[in-house]
Length: 235
Length: 200
Image 1 (cartoon, rainbow over the protein chains, first blue to last red):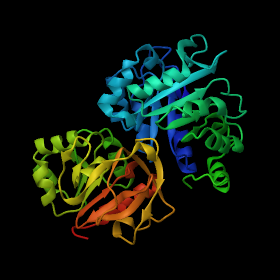
Image 2 (image 1 turned 120 degrees about the horizontal axis):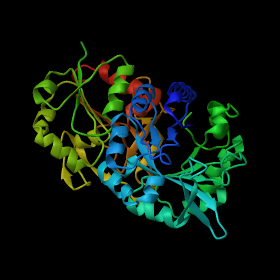
Image 3 (image 1 turned 90 degrees about the vertical axis):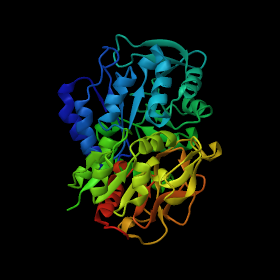
């Protein structure tokens, strides 16, 4: 779920409850304006979500220090996800992993195709500030694992919002050097896209937002369909 | 009256555990005080982090001696379950020694470590703690170390081979998964635990 300000907190709770009841396996909350605005995630909504949810959830956006992460995890989140702040100061990943264990530390990577390979982008929450981070995606995937990332969410920006399928080629390239759980993000539009990314890219999980928010795909329908395709999912 | 106490001592999942019990209509106090814990009807030992840190915290609070002597139902969760056993390879640490076995690290060949995510439960037979939970139920796991199946195992999980997912021996119980984050299956297990009285 992506949101920009606290005005929508009520909607967050409503959506969270809906996805919980529909059988989502995990929720990720992106406070997408947090990093570009230098703002930190506030903790009150995290606790309200934690009271409501009986599935794991991850909070992304604006986590710039061990103290920020501690507040979010202490309020009941399972994991924290860092993206732009880790690009500004990669040692943040080491600090978070040392303090909370690698299982809590997700590194989000926004990646865009380049003439050779793929390049990492940062501050993607604000179109005016979004820019190349000066790093090769595959090199960054290696580095964040060495520093203690316990999970990687790879958001393929070329595919994001197009609903034309996940970027299987890029995800497979990342999978080949990713020893921690890998979550595909960006591009889900139809049921077959989910089966394709599990089969062809070998990812551990597939994340989607707009197709679920709009109701274009319902989670129970998706899970039934994956089971028919012989892809084992929690019913 | 049911009066569960959650053993305090770090671990970021304590809030979510308290909320899970609240969803069952059950308030649970947080305490590291041996006298308070001894008075509880049910004791929950959570734990996220490293085994050596967890044991050091229990020892500092004098709980390493109290816990094995408790007669009321005790539930260890995740690391809390592993601490009920004899030892852990994680930091090569001696644990509480209530249950026989040693936690060992998953081999990197089985898949990504930590084993993180939803996995199926395989109950080995009927048990009060597993009432209403069957082969079609899944639970949420986050762990790098695991106990192989042993005499106390009542349900296994599978990650490159079977491991102890739920254990029970006398009044001591444990789940390697996080019931507070395992949807209806986890809620059922917590409710079953709160329904236990003393030796089962």
